[in-house]
Length: 450
Image 1: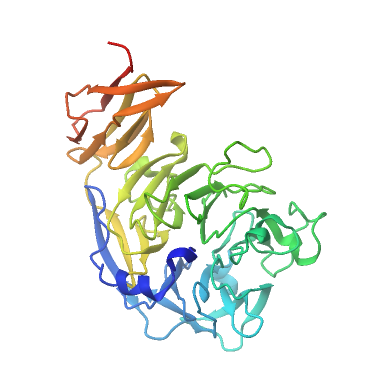
Image 2: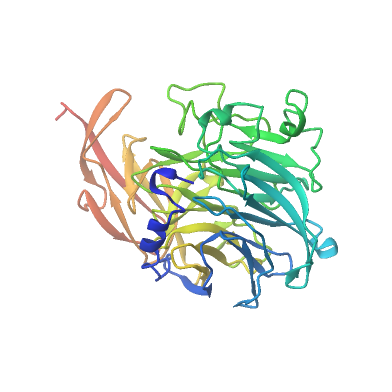
Protein backbone atom coordinates (compact mmCIF):
# COMPACT_ATOMS: atom_id res chain seq x y z
CA UNK A 1 0.00 0.00 0.00
CA UNK A 2 1.56 3.41 0.70
CA UNK A 3 5.05 3.87 2.12
CA UNK A 4 4.85 7.64 2.65
CA UNK A 5 2.39 7.22 5.52
CA UNK A 6 3.26 3.64 6.47
CA UNK A 7 -0.26 2.34 6.00
CA UNK A 8 0.77 -0.90 7.61
CA UNK A 9 3.02 0.89 10.08
CA UNK A 10 2.70 0.92 13.86
CA UNK A 11 2.07 4.67 14.07
CA UNK A 12 -1.17 4.41 12.15
CA UNK A 13 -2.20 1.34 14.16
CA UNK A 14 -1.99 3.33 17.39
CA UNK A 15 -4.05 6.16 15.96
CA UNK A 16 -6.61 3.90 14.30
CA UNK A 17 -7.34 1.83 17.40
CA UNK A 18 -8.96 4.83 19.01
CA UNK A 19 -11.67 4.81 16.32
CA UNK A 20 -13.96 1.87 17.05
CA UNK A 21 -17.52 3.04 16.49
CA UNK A 22 -18.00 1.60 13.01
CA UNK A 23 -19.19 3.17 9.78
CA UNK A 24 -22.31 5.27 9.35
CA UNK A 25 -24.38 3.80 6.48
CA UNK A 26 -27.27 5.52 4.65
CA UNK A 27 -30.77 5.80 6.07
CA UNK A 28 -32.54 2.44 5.87
CA UNK A 29 -29.34 0.50 6.62
CA UNK A 30 -27.94 -0.77 9.91
CA UNK A 31 -24.38 -1.59 10.91
CA UNK A 32 -23.25 -4.20 13.42
CA UNK A 33 -20.10 -5.95 14.57
CA UNK A 34 -19.56 -9.56 13.49
CA UNK A 35 -16.31 -10.36 15.31
CA UNK A 36 -13.49 -8.48 17.01
CA UNK A 37 -10.05 -9.24 18.41
CA UNK A 38 -8.51 -9.89 14.97
CA UNK A 39 -4.95 -8.61 15.21
CA UNK A 40 -3.70 -6.50 12.29
CA UNK A 41 -6.11 -7.91 9.67
CA UNK A 42 -5.21 -7.60 5.99
CA UNK A 43 -7.81 -9.52 3.94
CA UNK A 44 -10.85 -11.78 4.21
CA UNK A 45 -12.86 -14.20 2.10
CA UNK A 46 -16.01 -16.25 2.47
CA UNK A 47 -15.72 -20.00 2.07
CA UNK A 48 -18.44 -21.57 -0.08
CA UNK A 49 -19.93 -23.07 3.11
CA UNK A 50 -20.43 -19.62 4.68
CA UNK A 51 -17.47 -19.45 7.07
CA UNK A 52 -15.49 -16.21 6.89
CA UNK A 53 -11.69 -16.52 6.84
CA UNK A 54 -9.60 -13.51 7.88
CA UNK A 55 -5.85 -13.01 7.39
CA UNK A 56 -3.74 -11.61 10.20
CA UNK A 57 -0.56 -9.94 9.00
CA UNK A 58 1.54 -11.97 11.45
CA UNK A 59 0.65 -15.24 9.68
CA UNK A 60 -2.52 -16.62 11.27
CA UNK A 61 -5.62 -17.36 9.21
CA UNK A 62 -8.63 -16.95 11.50
CA UNK A 63 -12.11 -18.42 11.04
CA UNK A 64 -15.44 -16.80 11.89
CA UNK A 65 -18.06 -19.54 12.11
CA UNK A 66 -21.72 -18.95 12.95
CA UNK A 67 -20.87 -15.45 14.13
CA UNK A 68 -18.03 -16.57 16.43
CA UNK A 69 -14.29 -16.04 15.97
CA UNK A 70 -12.77 -19.46 16.61
CA UNK A 71 -9.91 -19.53 19.09
CA UNK A 72 -7.75 -21.86 17.00
CA UNK A 73 -6.46 -20.44 13.70
CA UNK A 74 -7.12 -22.43 10.54
CA UNK A 75 -3.38 -22.27 9.93
CA UNK A 76 -0.28 -20.36 11.01
CA UNK A 77 2.62 -19.75 8.66
CA UNK A 78 5.95 -18.16 9.48
CA UNK A 79 6.07 -14.81 7.71
CA UNK A 80 8.14 -11.69 7.31
CA UNK A 81 5.66 -9.11 8.62
CA UNK A 82 7.85 -6.02 8.31
CA UNK A 83 6.13 -2.99 6.83
CA UNK A 84 3.46 -4.21 4.44
CA UNK A 85 4.65 -7.83 4.27
CA UNK A 86 2.94 -10.79 5.90
CA UNK A 87 -0.13 -12.93 5.30
CA UNK A 88 -1.92 -10.82 2.67
CA UNK A 89 -4.41 -12.89 0.67
CA UNK A 90 -6.88 -15.78 0.88
CA UNK A 91 -9.16 -17.56 -1.60
CA UNK A 92 -10.92 -20.89 -2.11
CA UNK A 93 -10.80 -23.37 -4.96
CA UNK A 94 -13.91 -23.31 -7.16
CA UNK A 95 -14.25 -27.01 -6.38
CA UNK A 96 -13.76 -26.49 -2.62
CA UNK A 97 -16.79 -28.61 -1.71
CA UNK A 98 -14.98 -31.66 -3.09
CA UNK A 99 -11.24 -30.92 -2.76
CA UNK A 100 -11.17 -28.60 0.31
CA UNK A 101 -8.35 -26.50 -1.24
CA UNK A 102 -7.52 -23.16 0.39
CA UNK A 103 -4.99 -20.75 -1.15
CA UNK A 104 -3.00 -18.03 0.62
CA UNK A 105 -0.51 -15.31 -0.38
CA UNK A 106 2.24 -14.58 2.15
CA UNK A 107 5.79 -13.25 2.54
CA UNK A 108 8.43 -15.89 3.14
CA UNK A 109 11.15 -14.64 5.56
CA UNK A 110 14.89 -15.03 5.17
CA UNK A 111 17.85 -13.55 3.36
CA UNK A 112 15.90 -13.78 0.12
CA UNK A 113 12.46 -12.75 1.36
CA UNK A 114 9.78 -13.15 -1.28
CA UNK A 115 6.05 -13.57 -1.65
CA UNK A 116 4.51 -16.98 -2.23
CA UNK A 117 1.16 -18.49 -3.16
CA UNK A 118 0.51 -21.82 -1.43
CA UNK A 119 -2.35 -24.28 -1.25
CA UNK A 120 -3.56 -26.08 1.88
CA UNK A 121 -6.18 -28.76 2.43
CA UNK A 122 -8.91 -28.04 4.94
CA UNK A 123 -9.78 -30.61 7.57
CA UNK A 124 -12.80 -29.10 9.24
CA UNK A 125 -11.86 -25.75 10.77
CA UNK A 126 -8.09 -26.29 10.54
CA UNK A 127 -5.65 -27.09 7.76
CA UNK A 128 -4.53 -30.67 7.46
CA UNK A 129 -0.97 -30.91 8.88
CA UNK A 130 1.72 -31.07 6.21
CA UNK A 131 -0.72 -30.23 3.41
CA UNK A 132 1.01 -27.10 2.10
CA UNK A 133 1.75 -27.22 -1.62
CA UNK A 134 3.70 -24.30 -3.07
CA UNK A 135 1.89 -23.00 -6.15
CA UNK A 136 4.03 -20.01 -7.12
CA UNK A 137 7.22 -18.40 -5.82
CA UNK A 138 7.46 -14.71 -6.69
CA UNK A 139 10.62 -12.67 -7.21
CA UNK A 140 13.00 -11.97 -4.34
CA UNK A 141 12.24 -8.66 -2.63
CA UNK A 142 14.58 -5.75 -2.08
CA UNK A 143 15.06 -4.14 1.33
CA UNK A 144 11.87 -2.13 0.69
CA UNK A 145 9.08 -3.73 2.70
CA UNK A 146 6.18 -2.01 0.92
CA UNK A 147 4.13 -2.51 -2.26
CA UNK A 148 3.56 -6.26 -2.01
CA UNK A 149 -0.02 -6.45 -3.32
CA UNK A 150 -1.45 -9.72 -2.06
CA UNK A 151 -5.02 -10.15 -3.30
CA UNK A 152 -5.85 -13.52 -4.87
CA UNK A 153 -9.16 -14.64 -6.40
CA UNK A 154 -10.40 -17.29 -8.80
CA UNK A 155 -11.98 -15.87 -11.94
CA UNK A 156 -15.08 -16.97 -13.77
CA UNK A 157 -12.74 -18.91 -16.09
CA UNK A 158 -11.44 -21.05 -13.22
CA UNK A 159 -7.99 -19.43 -13.30
CA UNK A 160 -6.26 -18.00 -10.23
CA UNK A 161 -5.54 -14.25 -10.42
CA UNK A 162 -3.07 -12.45 -8.15
CA UNK A 163 -2.27 -8.77 -7.61
CA UNK A 164 1.44 -8.13 -7.08
CA UNK A 165 3.04 -4.81 -6.08
CA UNK A 166 6.20 -3.43 -7.66
CA UNK A 167 8.22 -3.59 -4.40
CA UNK A 168 8.73 0.21 -4.38
CA UNK A 169 10.71 -0.01 -7.63
CA UNK A 170 8.56 1.59 -10.32
CA UNK A 171 10.71 0.18 -13.15
CA UNK A 172 9.43 -3.30 -12.27
CA UNK A 173 5.93 -2.37 -13.42
CA UNK A 174 6.95 -1.90 -17.07
CA UNK A 175 9.05 -5.01 -17.68
CA UNK A 176 8.09 -8.55 -18.68
CA UNK A 177 11.21 -9.94 -16.97
CA UNK A 178 9.67 -10.18 -13.48
CA UNK A 179 6.27 -10.59 -11.84
CA UNK A 180 6.26 -7.36 -9.83
CA UNK A 181 3.76 -4.56 -10.50
CA UNK A 182 1.48 -6.97 -12.34
CA UNK A 183 -1.73 -8.97 -12.32
CA UNK A 184 -0.93 -12.66 -12.73
CA UNK A 185 -3.11 -15.46 -14.11
CA UNK A 186 -2.24 -19.09 -13.45
CA UNK A 187 -3.93 -22.46 -13.32
CA UNK A 188 -4.99 -23.83 -9.94
CA UNK A 189 -1.91 -26.09 -9.84
CA UNK A 190 0.49 -23.23 -10.61
CA UNK A 191 1.00 -24.03 -14.27
CA UNK A 192 0.57 -21.22 -16.78
CA UNK A 193 -2.36 -21.05 -19.23
CA UNK A 194 -1.21 -21.00 -22.82
CA UNK A 195 -3.78 -18.32 -23.69
CA UNK A 196 -2.17 -15.78 -21.39
CA UNK A 197 -1.43 -12.57 -23.33
CA UNK A 198 2.37 -12.68 -23.00
CA UNK A 199 2.82 -16.44 -23.24
CA UNK A 200 4.74 -16.19 -26.52
CA UNK A 201 6.77 -13.07 -25.64
CA UNK A 202 7.70 -13.54 -21.97
CA UNK A 203 9.97 -16.30 -20.68
CA UNK A 204 9.44 -18.96 -18.04
CA UNK A 205 7.30 -18.01 -15.05
CA UNK A 206 6.85 -14.49 -16.45
CA UNK A 207 4.34 -15.97 -18.87
CA UNK A 208 1.95 -15.77 -15.92
CA UNK A 209 1.66 -12.00 -16.45
CA UNK A 210 -1.91 -10.98 -17.33
CA UNK A 211 -1.57 -7.19 -17.10
CA UNK A 212 1.20 -4.75 -16.17
CA UNK A 213 1.91 -1.13 -15.32
CA UNK A 214 0.57 -1.29 -11.74
CA UNK A 215 1.99 0.20 -8.56
CA UNK A 216 0.32 -1.75 -5.77
CA UNK A 217 -2.91 -3.62 -6.64
CA UNK A 218 -3.63 -4.47 -3.01
CA UNK A 219 -7.25 -5.47 -3.73
CA UNK A 220 -9.42 -6.30 -6.71
CA UNK A 221 -12.91 -7.66 -7.28
CA UNK A 222 -14.36 -10.19 -9.72
CA UNK A 223 -18.02 -9.90 -10.66
CA UNK A 224 -20.04 -13.11 -10.27
CA UNK A 225 -21.70 -14.13 -13.51
CA UNK A 226 -19.72 -11.89 -15.87
CA UNK A 227 -16.17 -12.47 -14.62
CA UNK A 228 -15.39 -8.76 -15.03
CA UNK A 229 -12.41 -7.67 -12.90
CA UNK A 230 -11.92 -4.24 -11.33
CA UNK A 231 -8.38 -3.54 -10.08
CA UNK A 232 -7.79 -1.17 -7.16
CA UNK A 233 -4.33 0.35 -7.60
CA UNK A 234 -2.86 2.41 -4.75
CA UNK A 235 -1.31 5.63 -6.03
CA UNK A 236 1.72 7.60 -4.98
CA UNK A 237 1.22 11.34 -4.48
CA UNK A 238 -1.96 12.22 -6.34
CA UNK A 239 -4.47 9.61 -7.54
CA UNK A 240 -6.09 6.35 -6.42
CA UNK A 241 -7.40 4.21 -9.29
CA UNK A 242 -10.03 1.65 -10.27
CA UNK A 243 -9.01 -0.08 -13.49
CA UNK A 244 -10.96 -2.39 -15.76
CA UNK A 245 -8.83 -5.53 -16.02
CA UNK A 246 -8.22 -6.44 -19.65
CA UNK A 247 -5.93 -9.18 -20.89
CA UNK A 248 -2.58 -7.70 -21.90
CA UNK A 249 -3.39 -4.18 -20.70
CA UNK A 250 -0.72 -1.76 -19.52
CA UNK A 251 -2.02 0.68 -16.88
CA UNK A 252 0.83 3.11 -17.23
CA UNK A 253 2.66 3.24 -13.90
CA UNK A 254 5.15 4.93 -13.47
CA UNK A 255 4.66 6.92 -16.67
CA UNK A 256 1.17 7.91 -15.53
CA UNK A 257 -0.53 8.16 -12.15
CA UNK A 258 -4.26 8.33 -12.75
CA UNK A 259 -5.35 9.09 -16.31
CA UNK A 260 -2.41 9.95 -18.58
CA UNK A 261 -2.13 13.67 -19.27
CA UNK A 262 -1.61 14.10 -22.16
CA UNK A 263 -3.36 10.90 -23.19
CA UNK A 264 -1.16 8.01 -24.25
CA UNK A 265 -2.57 5.22 -26.46
CA UNK A 266 0.03 2.81 -25.07
CA UNK A 267 -1.62 2.87 -21.65
CA UNK A 268 -5.12 2.13 -20.40
CA UNK A 269 -6.59 4.86 -18.19
CA UNK A 270 -8.57 4.05 -15.03
CA UNK A 271 -12.35 3.99 -15.23
CA UNK A 272 -12.39 6.04 -12.02
CA UNK A 273 -9.85 7.94 -9.97
CA UNK A 274 -9.96 10.12 -6.88
CA UNK A 275 -7.41 12.51 -5.45
CA UNK A 276 -5.53 12.46 -2.19
CA UNK A 277 -7.68 15.29 -0.93
CA UNK A 278 -10.33 12.56 -0.45
CA UNK A 279 -8.22 9.67 0.87
CA UNK A 280 -4.81 8.03 0.67
CA UNK A 281 -5.12 4.36 -0.26
CA UNK A 282 -7.90 2.52 -2.06
CA UNK A 283 -8.70 -0.76 -0.30
CA UNK A 284 -11.35 -3.38 -0.63
CA UNK A 285 -13.42 -3.89 -3.74
CA UNK A 286 -16.44 -6.11 -4.29
CA UNK A 287 -19.38 -6.35 -6.68
CA UNK A 288 -22.91 -6.58 -5.34
CA UNK A 289 -24.26 -9.71 -7.06
CA UNK A 290 -25.15 -12.07 -4.18
CA UNK A 291 -27.24 -15.20 -4.46
CA UNK A 292 -29.75 -13.59 -2.10
CA UNK A 293 -30.39 -9.88 -2.67
CA UNK A 294 -30.76 -8.08 0.64
CA UNK A 295 -30.12 -4.52 -0.54
CA UNK A 296 -32.65 -2.60 -2.66
CA UNK A 297 -32.64 -3.56 -6.37
CA UNK A 298 -30.77 -0.46 -7.54
CA UNK A 299 -27.62 -1.87 -5.92
CA UNK A 300 -27.51 -4.81 -8.33
CA UNK A 301 -24.12 -4.96 -10.03
CA UNK A 302 -22.55 -1.98 -8.26
CA UNK A 303 -18.94 -2.01 -7.10
CA UNK A 304 -18.21 -1.13 -3.47
CA UNK A 305 -14.76 0.20 -2.59
CA UNK A 306 -13.18 1.93 0.41
CA UNK A 307 -10.26 4.12 1.41
CA UNK A 308 -8.04 3.28 4.35
CA UNK A 309 -7.39 6.87 5.47
CA UNK A 310 -10.65 8.42 4.28
CA UNK A 311 -12.63 5.85 6.25
CA UNK A 312 -15.45 5.88 3.73
CA UNK A 313 -17.13 3.27 1.54
CA UNK A 314 -18.29 4.35 -1.91
CA UNK A 315 -20.37 2.86 -4.70
CA UNK A 316 -19.37 2.81 -8.37
CA UNK A 317 -22.24 2.09 -10.77
CA UNK A 318 -21.09 0.55 -14.08
CA UNK A 319 -24.64 0.81 -15.46
CA UNK A 320 -24.53 4.59 -14.94
CA UNK A 321 -21.27 5.30 -16.76
CA UNK A 322 -19.20 4.46 -13.66
CA UNK A 323 -20.88 7.13 -11.56
CA UNK A 324 -19.68 7.21 -7.94
CA UNK A 325 -21.49 8.16 -4.73
CA UNK A 326 -20.74 7.85 -1.01
CA UNK A 327 -22.34 4.87 0.77
CA UNK A 328 -20.91 5.07 4.30
CA UNK A 329 -18.48 7.15 6.34
CA UNK A 330 -16.61 6.77 9.61
CA UNK A 331 -15.03 3.33 9.10
CA UNK A 332 -11.78 2.80 11.01
CA UNK A 333 -9.04 2.01 8.49
CA UNK A 334 -11.02 -0.36 6.21
CA UNK A 335 -8.81 -2.82 4.30
CA UNK A 336 -11.27 -5.22 2.66
CA UNK A 337 -14.90 -5.55 1.59
CA UNK A 338 -16.96 -8.63 0.79
CA UNK A 339 -20.60 -9.40 -0.02
CA UNK A 340 -21.93 -12.42 1.85
CA UNK A 341 -24.33 -15.04 0.53
CA UNK A 342 -26.92 -13.42 2.81
CA UNK A 343 -26.72 -10.24 0.73
CA UNK A 344 -25.07 -8.15 3.47
CA UNK A 345 -21.95 -6.05 2.91
CA UNK A 346 -19.08 -6.99 5.21
CA UNK A 347 -16.07 -4.78 5.82
CA UNK A 348 -12.79 -5.46 7.57
CA UNK A 349 -11.54 -2.71 9.87
CA UNK A 350 -7.86 -2.71 10.67
CA UNK A 351 -8.34 0.18 13.08
CA UNK A 352 -10.81 -1.68 15.32
CA UNK A 353 -9.45 -5.20 14.62
CA UNK A 354 -12.93 -6.32 13.62
CA UNK A 355 -15.29 -7.48 10.90
CA UNK A 356 -18.51 -5.50 10.61
CA UNK A 357 -21.70 -5.96 8.59
CA UNK A 358 -24.08 -3.56 6.85
CA UNK A 359 -27.66 -4.75 6.26
CA UNK A 360 -30.69 -3.13 4.69
CA UNK A 361 -33.38 -2.75 7.34
CA UNK A 362 -35.71 -0.20 5.79
CA UNK A 363 -38.29 -0.27 3.06
CA UNK A 364 -37.41 0.41 -0.54
CA UNK A 365 -38.68 3.98 -0.51
CA UNK A 366 -36.17 4.96 -3.16
CA UNK A 367 -36.31 7.95 -5.48
CA UNK A 368 -33.79 9.34 -7.97
CA UNK A 369 -32.14 12.70 -7.39
CA UNK A 370 -30.67 14.38 -10.47
CA UNK A 371 -28.18 17.23 -10.35
CA UNK A 372 -27.81 19.47 -13.40
CA UNK A 373 -26.02 22.67 -14.30
CA UNK A 374 -26.82 25.36 -16.79
CA UNK A 375 -24.85 25.05 -19.01
CA UNK A 376 -24.61 21.28 -18.77
CA UNK A 377 -21.28 19.60 -17.96
CA UNK A 378 -20.09 21.76 -15.07
CA UNK A 379 -19.25 20.28 -11.68
CA UNK A 380 -21.24 20.26 -8.46
CA UNK A 381 -20.68 18.58 -5.12
CA UNK A 382 -22.88 15.88 -3.58
CA UNK A 383 -22.17 15.00 0.04
CA UNK A 384 -18.68 16.43 -0.38
CA UNK A 385 -17.91 14.45 -3.54
CA UNK A 386 -17.17 16.48 -6.68
CA UNK A 387 -19.20 15.14 -9.62
CA UNK A 388 -19.76 16.17 -13.23
CA UNK A 389 -23.27 16.87 -14.41
CA UNK A 390 -25.64 15.40 -15.29
CA UNK A 391 -25.44 13.29 -12.13
CA UNK A 392 -28.16 10.94 -10.87
CA UNK A 393 -28.20 9.06 -7.58
CA UNK A 394 -30.76 6.92 -5.78
CA UNK A 395 -31.73 7.97 -2.26
CA UNK A 396 -34.11 6.83 0.47
CA UNK A 397 -37.00 9.24 1.06
CA UNK A 398 -36.20 11.55 3.96
CA UNK A 399 -32.42 11.19 3.69
CA UNK A 400 -30.54 14.51 3.97
CA UNK A 401 -27.83 15.35 1.42
CA UNK A 402 -25.48 18.28 1.02
CA UNK A 403 -25.27 19.82 -2.46
CA UNK A 404 -22.95 22.59 -3.53
CA UNK A 405 -21.88 24.60 -6.55
CA UNK A 406 -18.32 25.95 -6.94
CA UNK A 407 -18.18 29.73 -7.21
CA UNK A 408 -16.47 29.75 -10.60
CA UNK A 409 -15.71 27.14 -13.25
CA UNK A 410 -14.29 26.92 -16.75
CA UNK A 411 -15.82 24.90 -19.59
CA UNK A 412 -14.86 24.96 -23.27
CA UNK A 413 -12.54 27.95 -22.63
CA UNK A 414 -15.38 29.99 -21.07
CA UNK A 415 -15.36 31.10 -17.44
CA UNK A 416 -18.64 30.79 -15.54
CA UNK A 417 -19.82 32.12 -12.18
CA UNK A 418 -22.50 30.62 -9.97
CA UNK A 419 -25.85 32.45 -9.93
CA UNK A 420 -28.44 30.34 -8.11
CA UNK A 421 -29.91 26.91 -7.42
CA UNK A 422 -33.29 26.00 -8.86
CA UNK A 423 -34.65 25.27 -5.36
CA UNK A 424 -33.52 28.73 -4.19
CA UNK A 425 -31.08 27.20 -1.72
CA UNK A 426 -27.75 28.79 -0.83
CA UNK A 427 -24.63 27.98 -2.83
CA UNK A 428 -23.99 25.00 -0.53
CA UNK A 429 -27.04 23.70 1.28
CA UNK A 430 -28.79 20.63 2.62
CA UNK A 431 -31.71 19.00 0.86
CA UNK A 432 -34.04 16.34 2.23
CA UNK A 433 -34.89 13.56 -0.22
CA UNK A 434 -38.50 14.15 -1.28
CA UNK A 435 -41.15 11.52 -2.01
CA UNK A 436 -40.74 11.75 -5.78
CA UNK A 437 -37.89 11.82 -8.29
CA UNK A 438 -36.46 15.34 -8.23
CA UNK A 439 -33.99 17.51 -10.13
CA UNK A 440 -31.78 20.27 -8.76
CA UNK A 441 -30.13 22.67 -11.21
CA UNK A 442 -27.25 25.03 -10.52
CA UNK A 443 -27.49 28.01 -12.83
CA UNK A 444 -24.25 29.61 -14.02
CA UNK A 445 -23.56 32.67 -16.13
CA UNK A 446 -20.64 33.37 -18.41
CA UNK A 447 -18.35 35.93 -16.79
CA UNK A 448 -18.55 39.32 -18.41
CA UNK A 449 -22.21 38.81 -19.31
CA UNK A 450 -25.02 40.66 -17.44
